[in-house]
Length: 346
Picture 1 (cartoon, one colour):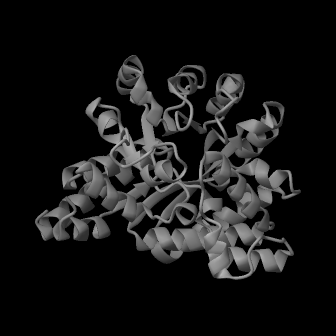
Picture 2: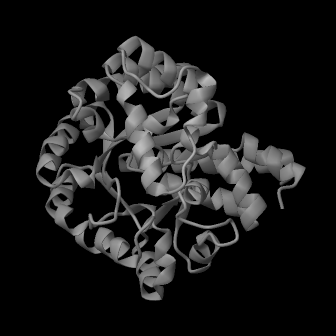
Picture 3: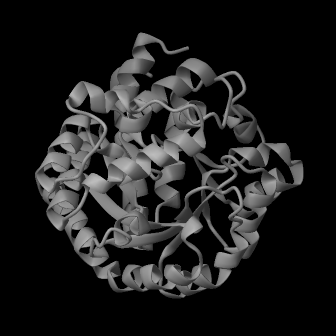
């Protein structure tokens, strides 16, 4: 149950978010202003009409709307604005650390300079860090539907922008017809470059996608991964190898990956001992926030304070920060959580 006491704790507790797409955080007002300034036509004339676009019947329709609206983001200045607004919002939710993805090919194919976009993102994140203390790093989420050859170009940018704050390499996009295995050489090169490895897998395709991401790619974190629940040996493998599933419950419902809260695999994944985190994925598109995901975990899955603290600790330990920074983050969160629980009696 989501009691008033637990609700107060959720609002105040320090948090970590690991599965968050920058393009999916743009507010309707900002999107409308960017589209007008950049001369990009979108099928909406005001904020209300932009908000009305965020309705989907299935995952494919979501991807189409996502890609269409991302066209309004053009310059490094645009990316800086989105990053700054996002980081301020995260800080207001008591997020201490976040890893945010951008989808590079959506922008490259429109002539956007990827390095300029990354520099803009990190400028926005650093400004918010100076003002609020929130720490945000970046990951590049390559769209698997663009093929393997173009991925090398994106990976090289990821490698050379590590000093700016790029910490992770991922593949995303539609799993259907695009298995992970062909990207094994790219993931090996990303690992060699010092990037953290994650992959969208097991969201709309079954266990084979998850097996491929773990065994062929060596991903230590999976975006979603919920279909692993259909394969008991796979659950054992994820638990034994410590592969973390970055689960986004509301996203799964609104894209049709899961039919209802009652059907969501999260409780069964946890019961199997698979490490999980909670995330908002695309908060504007899915009408949610990280804080709301915590509330919904309490309301629909029976998470209590112990469970939510375990989620935060798992996320901190699975982050792609350098080991010393990761250890410092874990220690800080433990200290803050203990103090908050003592003060609220939760």
